[in-house]
Image 1 (tube, rainbow, N blue to C red):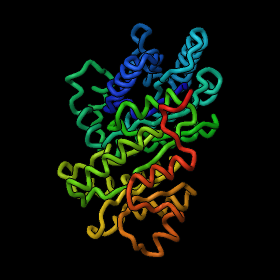
Image 2 (image 1 turned 180 degrees about the vertical axis):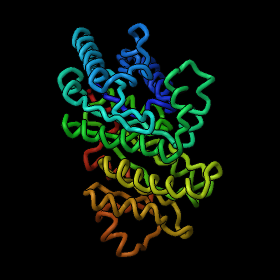
Image 3 (image 1 turned 60 degrees about the vertical axis):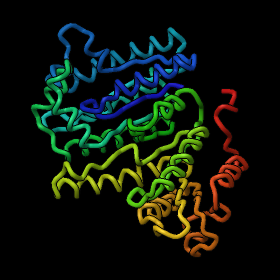
Length: 346
């Protein structure tokens, strides 16, 4: 599959993540072609991104169009079907978010099968920006001079997701938001398999003893054999690094991200609560299940107690989708048409 990848181009460490996917593919005898629009733009002598952003919007648009077409011709020439094409949907520059209306070039020359926006924790992105002087990335050094706040970084991330959603809708393909903290196999499977099933796993992260966490991790690991699994733990909140004002913004984005970027885009939500008595059901989990219901997503729950609230069985979870153990859950999953990826022929 051709996967169009967007995401903040400053501080994300996406190159390392994508290179890991390509290397994993090689280990599986599966070749993935890779093109980076910004790298292609900067191959021309003296054409650095910061300098190009100093030109008029029209000239920068023409430069992007030229590179999109060159990448498209290369894809056509090599008859490439399995490729990652990394592009920016927006760029935050001098306090302005520049949105790129590149959908016509993308649909005519790239023709992706799916659009993915990579994200990371805002504190990690800010740390990478602050360490810009340790790199050769001139654009990152320029961004460091602008000293973006956590709100600036999160706003840029939100704009990337929003415009990538518009691109995907225009292209009539799926759009996913993928944290780079996820295993490389997640994005690899999106390249390898057509119409990959997708799941969001919901569980209590505030209360979790060692045995319960082991059970949660076991379910997540096995579920990844059936499709793309979005795990909220892939983005870590580091409250010790933020002021109270920052935390208000970060918490708002966290709720929006989990409920809309994650839950709103997957095929199913799998709630895992392997406790018989304590702790009680997580408020975050129940909110995610409620939104999954409103988004008309499939909903499953692994929950050992034999007796349940009528609100759980008749509202949050579909009938027949509460399981006392993971074995019964996976049996039902397969009976409903989800099969392990290793059994697929594509």
